[in-house]
Image (cartoon, rainbow, N blue to C red; front, side):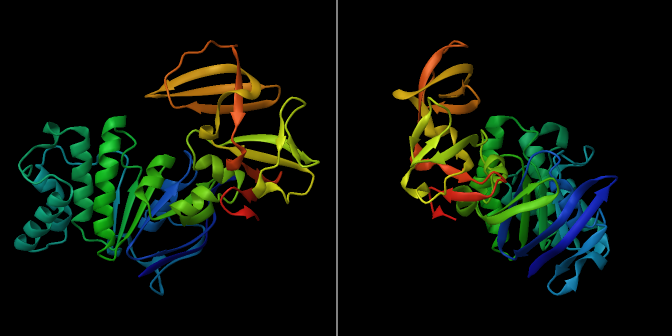
Length: 359
């Protein structure tokens, strides 16, 4: 089974919600659509579900025009950001509801409901009321109700976004195992997220989306190591990859009169001109042999410290693997690990990657 989108477009007034969207998805795979808020992720999922009709373009499922299939006939299940459960029904009744609507035999309903509850870790909760469940358990009920349909395509629209951090961490791992098992049944699972960590941990294929467009599609490793553009590099990193303007001249990269360094090996064939260079926060640390920067902000996150640094027009975020206190306006020496440096053309196109050299 394969789902192919060709030139999907949806425009409201002067803004595109979907802008020439193309992709191909195969059965037995997990796909994560990652993008910032208003990138078009939810619109795309609703288009696949049949809840929104595109202005132009086609969706093709196994050689048939998927767009012509009525919503109620599509083998599609969708889980939303909000916990859409029926509060007056028990957990069992919530999960069984879509099957009862189809008139499926009671024995078949029971078997499928119990299988779904087991998959999401809610075996033994059949008689509980929704109000008696935690937020994470309620989201599991919503997921079980989608899985029980045994649909060919399962859509999940940022299902963990409204949960607290610790619960997201727990469910992220559980969901990955559930999705892997579901994909092995030859289903297509499509998960949307704004969180780069979530997208990478779920594995499978990643589709990077921005302003209604698919900017890049590939496996998690390929997208992380070789983002096709500066925009992709920022969307797929948290914090966003640092980007700073510089010039290549006489075997050096020049950011300012005080910040200059030798071209790393993978960048040595770059022609002399202006570029946007990129470094992830982890590649910028404090070192007495580094360059002078002023601290604009210091953020402690768990056991790490993020430093927002500025030197003239160069602004970057660095990462320390420890908790440290700094004063705003304090001067520190920051080192750039250029073995991890990316080079993008001024139009944003990737020109050199530390993982694959020149493009």
